[in-house]
Image (cartoon, rainbow, N blue to C red):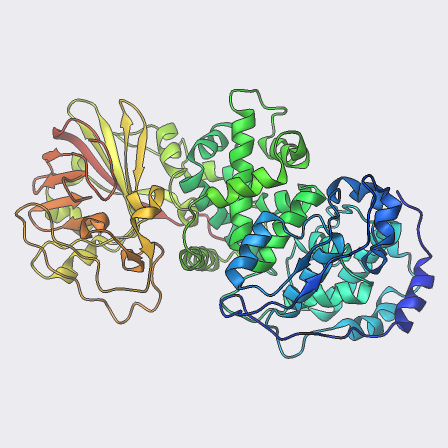
Length: 613
């Protein structure tokens, strides 16, 4: 570690005497930016093999808190560069390509510009505020042992490539932020953000102002850092939902080896803002400042994919998968370069920003309904399916737990509630509707006389079928999926999830109720003006290639249909006695059992919220 450049008291005096920064250039927002101010990197001539100190000499402006012996590996390429006028799309590509990642001074200037142009609350603490309050807050206490606010994890304060003065400065800045932002209740990413930006700041006050602008962003369409437990916990649930859809092999491993998969996914921000080495998190932050929160989900998903790839078939290093992932991320340089990590992250065809926002809002609403708004111990997902009181004539406890691992996170802590079974309520479609209406979502399980087991997760209340009048109309959302358990396990989700190229997210369109490909008559379902919030993965959010891509579920007095277009995933008759299954366009599934089958037992399960506090 480099020698400390001065005592905290010396530094405080120097900071108090320093002047404010001048601001240059106009403001821009990502969606409306036309030109970007010219930024130049150091133009100092470098010898073919410059020493660390020679490099440092050209960077005195931003080197106060940096231990250059630690930074050597990440600044090997010091070619003079400048960032000239460019459109936003070009800036996005430059960030992804790491244009300024090997030039310390240029990166500092880019960060300054990007953060300065974040739209903020009218009253946002700046550098002068820091100079006014730091002495009062820190006082004569030892800054190195300064207690941090309760909203951060005191045990997880990264030092990255900071020198001794920088390590002390992180705690001072966080303490001052806590004084100026009393509404922050939970922000575990903050120490990492402060430590990272300190590498690219001229003094503590400048770093303080940068972090405050990120925290004070008031653009409702731009999400940056979670500042409450509700926001953080809902982001963990959202990440779990994304893993379930985009990393199914890794998710299967997590379910198999973890006692509580939700607890594993609650670590996702720690992977980024705690375990990733400096050169990696800096590359992520480059893109994050340009593109926003969605980048964090992408990179965390990529980390999980690489973890599964590297560890596939190998025994776990410990009996704690959570700790194994942390170790993998900490040592990621052994297996994956920063370039490969970002390449993998941006190869994931993720939902649109709008869809992720709707999912996040749905998860927040579910947490609020459970009364989970402050930090508390997570419930174990295995408690949702109790071995002693779960009884099904179709699936075992283990099979039901496997199914539970597929459902959206906001329902994962609910217990299964048997709503309807043909063994008790008889084989009648009218009785089927009377027992399950008012419940959303539901899980349909079928056991055939050939002992095949299959089913469907259905996102929407069956009472929605009435909105089509007397004609059979499709409804539901892209969260629906179909599956089989016997003779082998296979799950089929909405075709658009795995093949987003088939649809382009667009403006809200009219009803997605569609006409069937068979002789049955269908009608359009009018939109309910009382629907103030569009559901996650509503088909009307997408420009679908054909109406058959959104035939999720339909019901009448004569039949039930799940999935449509060139066939149906399930067709069940009015007596709930016979059915058929085939490939359909909605789920792009194979037949889920014998194509024409007789039902032995049919069950419908709801979700009982007994784990709320």
